[in-house]
Length: 515
Ligand code: GAP
Image (tube, rainbow, N blue to C red; front, side):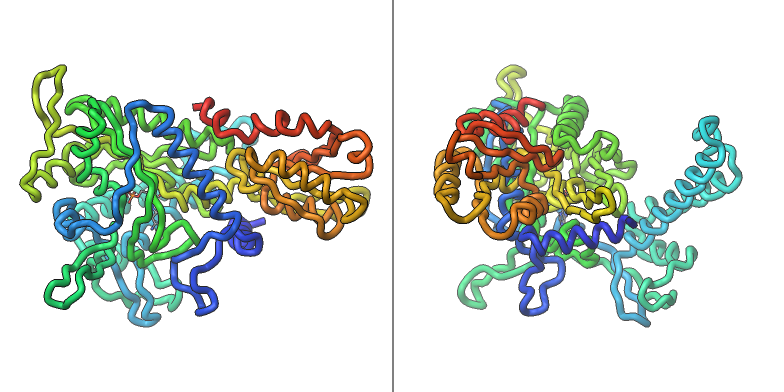
């Protein structure tokens, strides 16, 4: 199945099975805003717990914070968001559609990359085992030609973005004959800057009202509380502050479901270090964060680093962790070496010292910062995309299939479903008793409706790793059938052993031990 079709099915599945709903759906929805349903909220909470525990529980020098969404507007002036948190926009005069100029160019770059990949794949099947990919990439005239085009365009694009030079961005679009996907024409307006922050007002009268912003990142709440946490917690450098919370961006190109939203949640950690040691810590955090992702078991080959060649003015190193989504390798998390930019700016704008006294060095300085920043929603989409499988189970001419979410058990919203074979003869009572014994440890679900086969399929579709079936034998010998989601194997086990069979596999503790 084409990856695009698979993605569409995943989106539909999220809605049908209570993971993600379009916001305000009965009023025809609100662009790029989504609500999480009964299973979505559990998965989201489990992702957040995995992140939070990996930071705060496993590191004695990382503590948490929950800062407010509303903050003094000067914070956003100091951080640079008022002046520079912009997207370059371009309109097509015929379709009246608006696009991000940088995204139009990036899409063209991706197409060139795909063309190269196709040529390489064709050659691989032609040459078989003898195929020497590096040699082919550097000598095949067609591949070399596309690569040169790619490199030239990429350089021009990076230069234009560094200004940014808006006229040059438009010229790149014109020179490369990029057309509007809707009208098919090249009738473009000029490129304009558009600030991504949402503004509102605080205060009761129009005279006293102050324009404030919904935070576009949680990080600034950490920076402005840096000394509060350091002093009240007697923290010694190096130390980190972790925070999860909502962030808001007026994204213009809102596509790919929950990949790019206007209201989303971030999990950010700012790690404060001695100046001069930041690049060492940057590499450590890059590796630590990659390990966190890979420990979920979705296949190491599906992740890669993308080191930024063009750095933001406040960074001296930056890398993304990308995952192979159905629509290509895309950023899930960013790791940034932000120097002392933010703290220094806040010191300047607030007039308050943002320095730390280092007792070992016997001197005060503004610490440097390594940031790890990941979107909860994007991580959610990554987990769902990696877990969604359509399986053909046809046997001996009898057609059968299932949709299964192979979620890591530790993240699955429901850990086990208890299913009485029939709704009578005391089997529901036994089932309820089993749930009563396990519900303090695991999220359990009871289901007695429909045939057992249909109930298994329903649990597969929401990703429940274990189904426990209660039958007449249970009443006699206190054993049940446990059915494993991924293998679909079933075995008879004593009720008394259920907890120990399940506990390790769904335990956050065991997951954290992999880090
Ligand atoms: N404090 C740094 C920062 O905010 P960012 O690269 O703009 O950096 C970090 O965002 C992460 O937040 C991204 O890697 C992504 O996972 C998530 N994110 C950013 N914008 C998002 C959006 N519009 N919708 C969903 N997630 C988003």
